[in-house]
Image 1: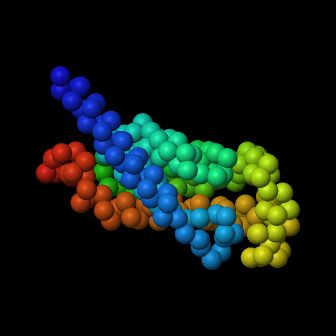
Image 2: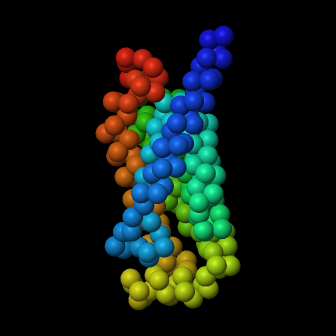
Length: 199
């Protein structure tokens, strides 16, 4: 009976965090050093919190659910959601697994930083081999590359663009989510666990 209650609570909190993540996807904004079609948002924040508080499976579920919901309102043909979901998995699953093994502040920091590094590293081959080839069904590769060249004229290839722009952007996005999580997790953890103590 107790296990059933825990499962119901886990599913409920996972769903709530996924809904928050879905809403956060709409609060996206451009950054000066990236093409306008690439936006910054903090929708991985609830997934990272979920991975720490409920485990890596819940963190991954939040990434999946928010992107399935966003797919209903998106005009990216599902390509943006696919990228966001895969990179989200790369971010929150390692973070959640390491924190589950070592439930300390240090464990959370190591896990989340490792997740951010993995997300950044995976972003290059993911975009080069899968995401941008899919995007060329919507926009010519020349148009995509010209958007990067408008920022830095020395960009001569898609791979170069990904290394110069997307890799540091993805790392920055991950680190920003890590920073915010560490600022707020202590305060919201008791609410998630229904206790008066941080976990």
